[in-house]
Image 1 (tube, rainbow, N blue to C red):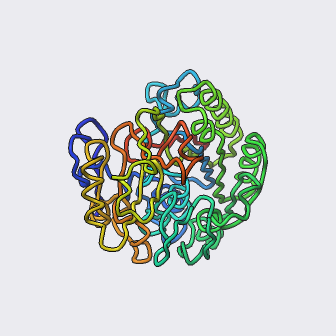
Image 2 (image 1 turned 90 degrees about the vertical axis):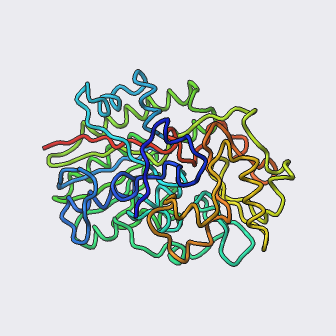
Image 3 (image 1 turned 135 degrees about the vertical axis):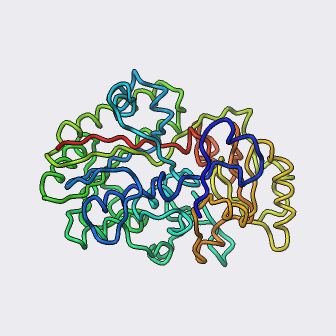
Length: 396
């Protein structure tokens, strides 16, 4: 069963984990996008759960860190994108939910596999390696583990390519051989290009090069500006304007019988220094904790043996008025990771899972110095982090 509650003020009134606005898996999330596209391409084995009209050529343009609400706040900086989401301007855009946690590794795996986190298994920024007392960073893939044992399901690109549809990914050359690309976005041909303009032009050419084509392209710079300067900064707004121009550039080159879908992996929120709790300096939160995983707004907390109940009680007592704090089983039952969780994924999830409800972050200044210094953060289920755009441009 899919657990999903609408986003709005009433969604945030209760502290019960089941009251958290769990992502709309099964008909309104990132993991539904490519299966719906593949169904429209006529690929066997896929069912469309999104209202997308079929197209022979489809491009998915994913902008890292470009939340739905953030576009809506900046119409003057993103006039092209605003026109696609604003019904008064003829737009048909709608929001999707990213999935939990709303973080890049998790979302890219959800996009590429068409599966929720409970199945593909990239269930956090850092998660425990079951049976080992250490964390794995799933974005950087450190420490290295066998990618296809960690995420064994085929990608949508692999299945589409096997069905005779031209599949390609147009991204930075830096991502060509990364384990995350292998488990989340591989299949067909990877084409590396350095600049955003080069990627947009090549993506359009790839679409036109085959009668049936699926092309994925990506830019990361907006996310980087948000982390460094915040989403309420001139640097971030200038990069949003650049992304807006890239989207228009791609849309203007679409070949006949094609559709372009512009989306993102998560939004972002700026957290003030006074709203940051430092786990490395807080003896109470640290009591009984063996490993602190996840990230500042979506924590996986792994207890020493026998201490899980006490850790849950303390985290709930200290943070329960500002975060949704759940046991592993409560978070799974509430549908945070999807309607099902594979056995291999179960112990990657923390004994306690804490997701920010308010403007708060649980940082770790000594063990995570780089992440703790970031201005813009994400990971939780609040609308500004969780809602991402699904914007469409179609050429008959």
